[in-house]
Length: 183
Image (cartoon, rainbow, N blue to C red; front, top):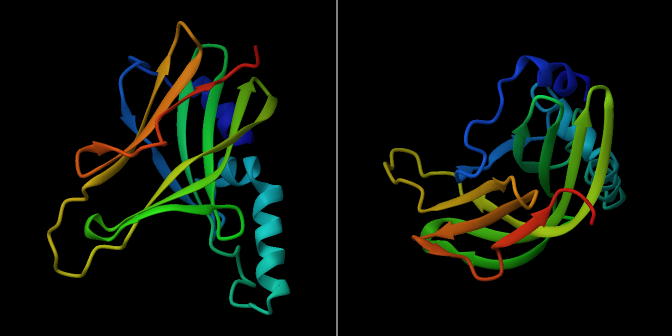
C-alpha cells in the first residue's frame, strides 16, 4: 500500500480517463514489490484461499500463495488514486462460460475498490465482476489473443465502465458500470 500512495505523487494524471484501456493483471502467487498493493487489497481473501488449499492437503504452495491472479484498473488524480481490482481464485470465483476456440475462460469473481488519499486508504466491496482468464499460448504459435478485458472512467458520474470482448463481441453479462463512491 505504501508503494502506491508514495507513487501517487510521482505518477502523472491519468490522460483521457474516459478512453477504453486494457485492464492490467498481477500474479499474486509469488509476492513481489510490483504486486504488493494488489496483495494488500486482497490479503484476507488470498489467506482464505491458502487455507482452503491446505485444508485439502495441498502443500505445493508453502513457499508462496496458492494460485491467485488479479486484474486491475488504476485512475490517478492530483489528490487521490483509485484501484478497481478483481481477484481470481479457485475458492472465490464461479465459472460463467468457456470459449475454448478463443482460449478464454470467463469467471465471476469478487471485486474491490481501493481509494488512496495520501496515506489513507478506503477499501470498498464492489460485489462481483467478470474476470477473463486466457489459456497459455501454445509454444511456437503466433496467435493473437482474441479476447480482452477493458475499462474506462466516466469523470462526470464517477463510475468505471468495464467489459470483456471475445472474438470482437462483448460478453453478455460482463458489461457493467461500477460506482466508485457510495451514493
